[in-house]
Length: 235
Image (cartoon, rainbow, N blue to C red; front, side, top):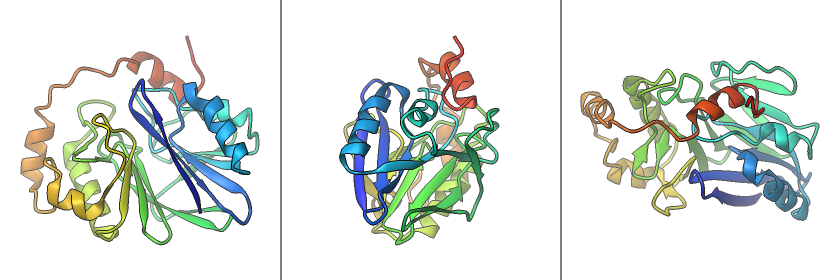
C-alpha cells in the first residue's frame, strides 16, 4: 500500500492518501479544500488516481475538498455516512456499518461512530493495522459533543466499539491534532487517553464532555452549509 499523511495548519486537520500499488487506485480521507491542489499533485506524482473521497463526517471547522478534488478526478465517488444529512446526490455514496469499500486491491471497512455528529464514520484497513477515526477519537482526546447532534453517551459507545473492534497495535490516525502528534495506537489510547481510557465509565466520560465549554469553530457558519453540498461554498 502507498500511504501518505498530510496536514493543514489552519485547522490542524489531518488528510490521508491510501493507494493500491497494483492498480493505482486511491482513497483520500478528509481532504481540505485549500489543500486540494497539493493533494492532487501528490497523488499524480505517486502514480495514483483518486477513486474514493472518504469524509468521516460533515465537518464544522473546515470545508471538505470533495468537489474541488473531483475536478482533477471526475470519476471519484464521495463517501459520507447515510446518517450525515448531506443534500447533494451527484457522485455520492452513502455508507453504513459493516460496508467494505474496495479501492483496487485495498479493502477499507466502515464503522458507524456517532457522538461528535450523528453521521460520523471510522474507516479501518482490512489487516486492522490502521484506523482513521475522524473526530470520534483523537490522540489523548476526542471530538466535542456540544452541537451538531452531539451526544457524549453515543460517543462513549462509539469509542468503546473502536477499542473492542481493533487490536492494541492498530495505529490510530485522527482527523485533527493540536499538539503536533501524528498518530497513536489503540493500546496507547486505552491506557493513556485522559477522557476515555479503557476502564472509563460512561458517567465519568459524560461529566468531562458536558463541561468543556469550548468556543464555536471559527468557520462554523461557512463550513457546515458548504459541506452539506459536498464542499460547495455558499457565500
